[in-house]
Length: 417
Image 1 (tube, one colour):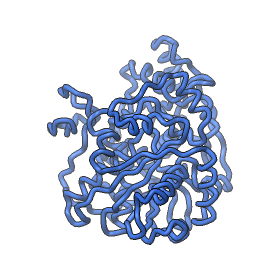
Image 2 (cartoon, helix red, strand yellow; image 1 turned 120 degrees about the vertical axis):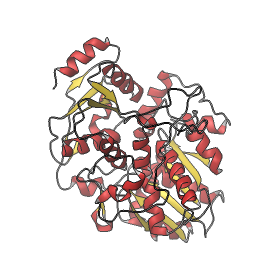
Image 3 (cartoon, one colour; image 1 turned 60 degrees about the horizontal axis):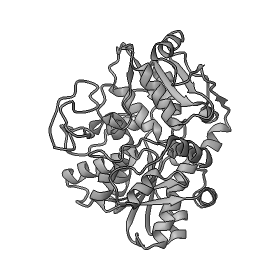
Image 4 (spheres, rainbow, N blue to C red; image 1 turned 90 degrees about the vertical axis):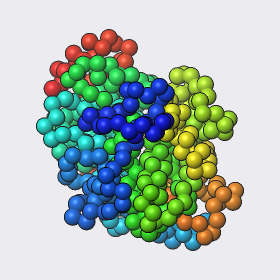
């Protein structure tokens, strides 16, 4: 469905946009089954397969885990705080080996591919998405090219070596996520390769939206408020979309969760745009973007071209739900990482701590109350436990400048296979 005008279109198998749409718009999956029905016979993420656009079941997936917080909830005076955790903490049943909720999108996107797909998938990432897609494709023998800024490769650790079907391409030192995007775009000019599509891919969004399905399955109702840190905002858009599906189901309430999102200061492109009451993104030069991305702790929150303005994007999600935006400093994020570990018993990533920081601000400002049912999407953590079992850091297979001609980039990538 075209979100801008409600026009229904058929999925060609990898539809990313409505070619007839006069305005930029996300397309949204419409499922034949209007009721939320977890499928107990499927493992991991695929227990939610009836609301995923998948063609097959992949191995080694894990679903997000939701539980009633006692430590953080008690500290904040919140009786009904629920943590949805996507990471590694076997004590609570969380077994995402890459420690990030990006696994939810990687499994859903890759399962949207037909089993005998002939082309090679291309994904651009600032870090966590790269790790998730690399692990999922390695486990399931799916050819993929992943483009990542060179400075972010230090975060690309894995429990064991990846299979040769996974190729990692770096943009040069000092580059940012947008450079990795440009590199991937040039690779996709050859028909042997095709773009994953980012936020435009319904499989990516609906995979990420399983965090809300996990919460509703545990709580038994739609939460009143939803908290998440955002780089692109895709996860928050996905939460909004599944909220609308759950309302249409009718068995879990009719309320729209207030969506509260946050960014790591000084990289606050979407925060600044929202506070300016602007659908259009405020001016943000590539030089400023790179400078700010270098400073922030939560580097995965540094998308310079997020799906904020288009129909069905983050601006619409916040407007429709009465949500708001927060920003958090590096110092506050570090404090929240330490507090969360003391209160909940496991470590979380800086991006997840950004969401915790925003929840604390919302409590201080009276935006959420003691009895509100609150879901916080803790998007990654548990790396200390996972890495204690041994790991290695993946080195790039190639380092290429996005300024090279497309033909030269494609030639060098072809030589890897």
